[in-house]
Image (cartoon, rainbow, N blue to C red; front, side):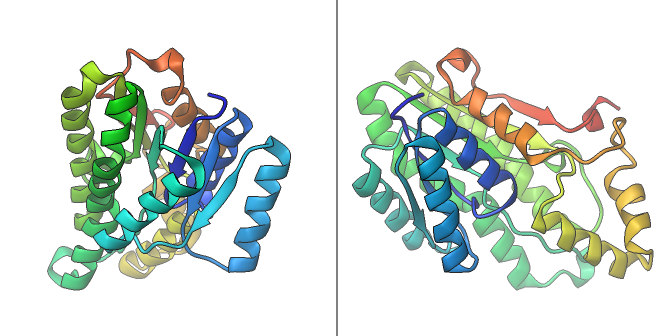
Length: 259
């Protein structure tokens, strides 16, 4: 994977940051994307670059805006070269009963969790096809495979991500490009921390009970999934060794979907 060029969205924390670190450790030049304190993000980029000896750059593109997504992909190609790997990891969440779910939150979640992936893939495919190699990995969720209450937009978007993954995989299979999804169970990331608080508010349960009942109750391992384990699965799907794996939705879920 040395000298491959990668874009990892939603990579200033959690699964995305772990993935950016993992890809860089394998020799990839990486563009990070996300929100946060700029000084802290610059320090993270510098640390990854120093440890890996690769080029690490950053975009603060707002992925709810298609024009910003396209601009980010152009900036990545200018800074790194043609993009070989796209990891669509950015995600947002809102928890509410469906009849109370705000329309603007529905639009935001579909824009960031689903449409942004379409726009990054669309921007990256021409160069991938020209070179006859590419890797696309979309972060879905176990909620892309099963339903859950109070998360209508998230569940819809993650099911959509898996559908998009399959459609892209079939379309580009003859061009040396693979497209897969990973479906994590509960990973302790900032988005999950917010979900725990929101679910506690909706259900009236203490946060520790929400974590155990709502987030870990269906995971036979009974533990949170470490971000590094999801990152390792993503990195494998980006490797030459995974060249015949495409169109899959890979659970990394502590047995959640084995029920």
